[in-house]
Image (cartoon, rainbow, N blue to C red):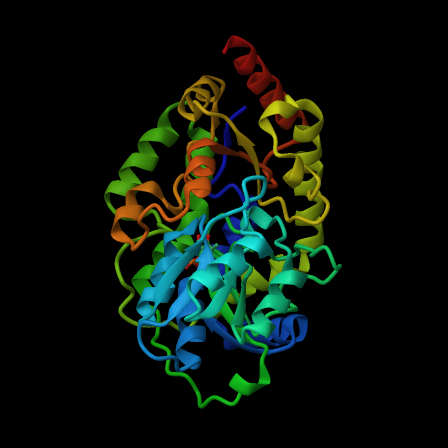
Length: 399
Ligand SMILES: Cc1ncc(COP(=O)(O)O)c(C=O)c1O
């Protein structure tokens, strides 16, 4: 068993070949655009990253510079970047202790404390739905623009049975590595509110060939790394490819100089995954059911377990105080889960100090210090999930 949380774990060999061989045909872009417009009922713009889609949404709103954009207090640096690049300020709303999203109560309290908030982003962390009905009502009452970020939650079903992406004024999607829809990179903005649809054409730059070349190779390189990790070759290849910058990295603290048009070959990979979404969701749910059935319930969140059937289950979270010990223990059995979403309120941890986060979210700090994600992707079997559960229980007994 060699199991990773990330490192191309969404891909199979067919994907590797498609990434290498698909032509840059504008028909692929047109097909994806029309699919998204139909699915999310809005005007779609395809870009290179989810953070660009967020920046674009905020720019279309024409808000005064430095406007307050409220976000989940457990989030990703890319979200921070999207807001800052648009010239605005993130305002963090602490999460509910039993969930990974803020509650309507926390939202109300934040709006009272800071009535200048103009925009709210919900993100359904790891695919677990937020309480959208109440959140949307609060936004309407306070004239706040609602953006649904589906980076983790393409396919999430809210409590009121609406699919994620069919509620907000805007929807942003990320198709980056390890997301529900993984096209190595990619993003989309869906303008659902008609008031903002009447835009002149947006100027997007052409993505450099070098970046496309690196992205095309990512599925192949990660396939080689994962399959040869056992015999150490993979480990060395991973280190070398990273060192020479040939391994496409999803996170960077560099500001993208421009917003880029998403080339056709990414669009074909992305569209194919939308078509296969139900299989992806079923696979992940099946694996999570194995974890829920087998892992000691004292390290699970009852609220999240109760939402498994509505979630995309992008990853399955467990909560342990001495997380690094468990990571080391699992590594002995070739289960590599050190890549944690999220290990800080604005993750990854090393990036938090670059942001305006100043301990506003104590619950998020506690949760992010204890959370550990188990893989649910297509490259893990039910048998492996059972084995991982047993190892975790074994480790717990040793504590
Ligand atoms: C919640 C969330 N939104 C948006 C993004 C942006 O993704 P991208 O890397 O495509 O810019 C991420 C990235 O990890 C994310 O976790």
